[in-house]
Image (cartoon, rainbow, N blue to C red; front, side, top):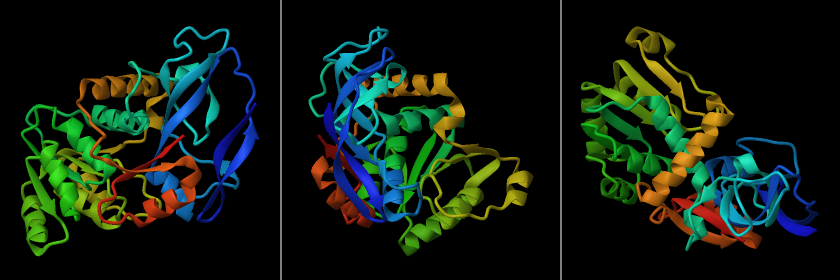
Length: 314
């Protein structure tokens, strides 16, 4: 059967290609993709900040409807909505990775479960405690998603820091007790003051050397430093300070969780979204037809004012 997918073919160049899709294997479901998120990892591959051998199909934050189920599949049925992966209209997915969405989503682009599962994984590993003082460095899509869920915990204080005022406004709406604009002199002064107070939990989401250094300064002795962002360039860290402070430094990569824990993260993410604990509507700011993937990625790489996250629709 023929279908279409978005292929990365060169630096800053993607194209829609027609490919063949086989019947699903006994352990697979065949999914008609409805939407897929444009992640920071996709943008890094587009700009060649990160690299893979060309050509390859992009995307990993998909949602779609099951069209066919393999003979051994009992967990989902045709007609149900599940998570999928690639920017590919019709795709076969191992049933263990096809996590079911309750009901039929009114807007599939708001059911990007994969990034929410990453947040669930990070907060689980961060061992959030009642009364914690927490700060999130970076209020982009992931930082704001973290803020939404972390605000549901009984933390004493939750600060969000970023250089975009509109993102900080959202952080306040999502439950941050204070925001700091890092692009202003007042913001710089506030960060210096906060470094003297120290936080139980610092979550770094900005993929920058400066933010990583700041995170090290802000976390208290014996505290938890969660490196959430994927740093695409070599960084220097003050291991001596990490040692002297006795920090618990967390690499919030879901791959460290193992297959069963990753599956649990997806299931918990679905529950959080269904309950309304996380709402992606204010965060998915741009939508594009999958045939417009080139323009969508160019926009995501520029991140103009008002841009938080884009999604491709199929």
